Image (cartoon, rainbow, N blue to C red; front, side):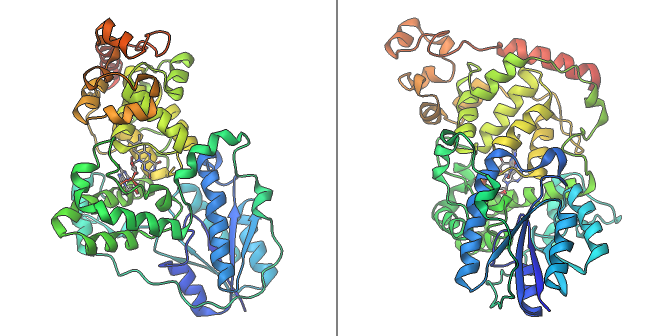
Length: 461
Ligand code: FAD
């Protein structure tokens, strides 16, 4: 009898335990289900759907090259997966374990209907396997990371297996799903990316050239110092073990460590989500639900469109809109600006990121927003307010601003981080008229900071 491989956010053939397990067991049928029901509010956002379109097309090509096919079906996976298994008379369904709350509910339902074989492989280690001496789970990164080392390095990645295929029934075509945005101009900037397993491997190879400088380069938005593997990792086009070993093999241990640690944050985020299923909607510490957030649609729109008057924030938000990705340092600055300076609910920003990011990831996104808020289960401080101008200068963002806020491109480095403080003559020379070609700051730094500290202090002081 055939074995069904159920692909989820793990769209690869290499180092995929469920693919390998099914291929060992017998002839396979490969399935992907577009399920917009089970995740509810957290169904895949618009930018990632663009990515999914091309990623599924790449996976289908890779399967076809081996004599197989990718079966596409749409609907609630809890219904569709057992239905396909019955249709082909599958002996078992093979899949990787994922840790979103809705995925667990769905898996439990499927396991009642079919033989569901779940494999570890989306993370460095299964979340519940990293335990404190007392047997409890960790909420703080550093002790968790130290404990994880007992299981590191992860096992060496495995190549894609030899597979034989059973005949797949008829399914949808990728065009049926209309995953590409209706307004084509939205996705034109996305052509910097190459979705799919081969694209991910190429991105990793490019990063290995600069990986030894990661610790310095990663904080500078003007440089290409980070790996940009996040969208490939989010849909699992490359395994975390493949990335780990490639970097550990290419770079001396001391230089590899900062990067491997960031990979650790991805595992840690899933670990938190595994413990706190509502982490995307509920603050880690309940007092933060009482903050009197502002309902300020004009300010929100200015943030979303990159028109806040703070060049570093605006550059980040426009980069996000244009290529579906934002530099990590700038994510922190832009997110902090929303929840502190504008005092707008973090969940509003979290959802905007979710819809705009090609690397949208439930664990990483919720952890990032709660970290910036200072509302997380790790008890991080809430009274840290990123100063956008100081950060912009400190991390040398002038070239980054010139790229994403071209109306400021002619300003000198000394003026570009805070154009409202520049000499009028300098602004004129650069063709900048504040309030016309570029906005004044929508809120002053000191004023925004004081308002945030008062509102946060009122609940958490
Ligand atoms: P690199 O620096 O090359 O890091 C390598 C990999 O490690 C990343 O691809 C990612 O998988 C992981 N990683 C790195 N930093 C973090 C981190 N802080 N937390 C968790 N994992 C990390 N990352 C997402 O993948 N999806 C999101 O939806 C997401 N939302 C975020 C929201 C906010 C408010 C903030 C502050 C951060 C968010 N991040 C998110 C984390 C981080 O910004 C991105 O993972 C990183 O910028 C991706 O770029 P890179 O692949 O070049 O990272």
